[in-house]
Structure formats: C-alpha cells, structure tokens
Image 1: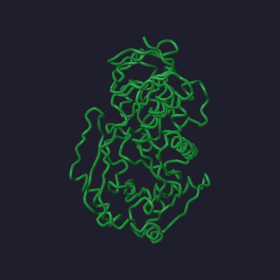
Image 2 (image 1 turned 180 degrees about the vertical axis):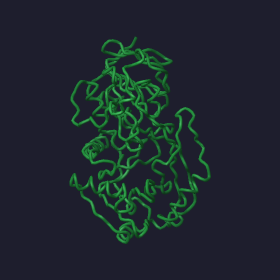
Image 3 (image 1 turned 90 degrees about the vertical axis):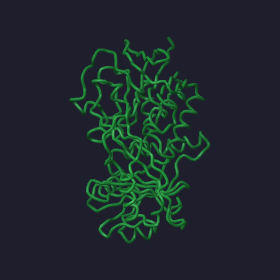
Image 4 (image 1 turned 45 degrees about the horizontal axis):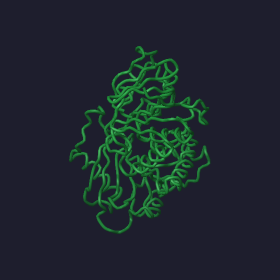
Length: 391
C-alpha cells in the first residue's frame, strides 16, 4: 500500500490550492479527482470569477480576501502568467439593500478605499451600465476577476513540480480512519496517509456521510451575450465587474467582454440539484430572464446570446464556508460548501488547509466556519467507513 503525508480528495479551487501549498512545504501529496481538472463539471469553471474586497456578505471575510490577493500575486509570479484581471467593481442596489449596505459596512469597518455613487454618477463612471434612479453604487477600485481554469492549472502544475502525485479520473470510493491516519480506497488502489483533506465541492455530503452539515447543491447558469454594437463600452478597461441587487433578495452579476461576450448570471435563485444527475441543458426561459435584465441595465450589450454553461453552488444554511476538522476524526480536514462565493479565497484557504494538515496554527480565526454550528448535522460517526463518493 502506497503511503503519503496527505491525500487531497478533490482538485478544484480549494483542493488544487491545498495540493500546491502542501507540496511546496515538502509534504508527500496524493491528489485525487473524479474528473480531469480543470474541467467544466463542477463549481470552478466559467472563464471568469469575481474577486472583491468590500465584502457585502460579512466583514469577517475581508482579512481573508486580503491574504488571497497576496497569494494570487505570488501565484502569478510563479506561474508566469496573468491570473487576476483588475477592472474595479460596482456593488449596486438600493441604499438600504443587502449588497450596498453590506459592502459599505465592510469598507468602513476595514478602511477600504471606496466611493458611494448615485445613479447618475454610476452611469458617468461606467457608460455601459444604467441603473434605476433609486439605486446607488459602491465603487471598489481593487475588484476584478480571476481566470478559474488557469488558476487551477497553475496550482496543479506547481504542485506536480514540487513532487505531488496527481491522479485524475480516479474518484474516492471510501475512506477509513485508521489510528491517527487514514486509508483511502479508489477503483484503482488503496492509499495510506497521515492526513486527508476533503475538498469535494458538490460531492462533499457523500464523502462525509452522517457527519455532513446540511448541504444543498444548487444548479446555476452562466450566460454570455455579444454586445449589440462594437462600441468598446464593455472592454475590461472601461467596464468593471458588478453585482446588482435588482429586487429584494434577487441579485445578478457580470463581467466585461474579453472576446467571448459579456458574461452575466444570477446569484442563487437556482433549482436544487444532485451533482450526479445535474441538468446540463439550458432552457430558453432561463436565457430570456437574464436577457431582460441585460436590456434594462446593460442596453448596449443587448446583442445575440452566445453561450450558456451550467455550474453548481454547494450551500450551507447560513451561506458561510465550512473549513474544519471532521467532528470524529481530526486527521480528516474538510473544506467545502462555499455557497457560491468561495473561488476568490481559494489561494488563502489552500494555505490554511496546509497549516491544518501539517499541524501548524492557521493565521485566521476559523470559528465562523466550523461544522459544529450546524449541531443537528454533527454526529460521532457511523463506524469508520464512509460511503462511496465522486470527489
């Protein structure tokens, strides 16, 4: 039986970052994934993922995203390519809405550079964007987007350069706690490790069994539209990333056109799904709904629909992350359920997972991300064997 210091199950955003960080610290690492990352079957694809500092969800994320920015800059240097494209960002909506009020709270609490713009000022700053007169915008100069496929490829290439063994199209079937280590079984082999990092995204519940928090997989759709006129209004130099609360409890977001059209999508509002039976086809009504938003808020981008792609959110009840040790087996580390807003943090979370796996103290307070906050979802265990997974 082959032995490693750490097995990482799932090589998407979090798992690839963890594999890289562990390998470069000298750990022997085995990375496993049911697909061949970077791929388009999970939660870490779509050619652009937002990064922002004035975090409307909660100010507690700001120190973490600041560290992530540092790690993204380092990864770009190591990989020798651009992974983060700065565009600035606008958080839009009513002044007392979730997005604007939350962004202002984080910006003020952490002293982040920002501007509060009325609707007229928003249009003057970004001519390709129009909001209703009752909306305002919080301008954030450091926001932008990450290229997820390139990020994952860079993390995995660097992990391999540091000696990590990466096995793709090899899902974990079971794992067993064995003393202070683990035994991981796949269709191709059995591996022993001192630590196991579970970063399985939408397949996390099947890996955790009864110890899983109450997770809900949500089907989400990303869309690309060609601008109606070639005005340059939606180039990255003129158009920022945005999140817009267009109705109570309803938010959509978008990106500039980098050659394949303006990318837009709803945030949440998707249907519950199963990762193994996910509906990959996109209905005309789904495209029409987003196209109507485009006509209202980005009228010059109201051109032909170019493409749609399905992905998944894995949501906790409070929409905060899970980064913790298994409640019964501390040698098993869990990182998942990022509820649709985790990719930007993955460089920093990879560092945290490596700290946890190697017995070092993480720099950040992880109490808000503990599994125990979902008390009814935590049990001792159902024996030591955990069910088949597709991580």
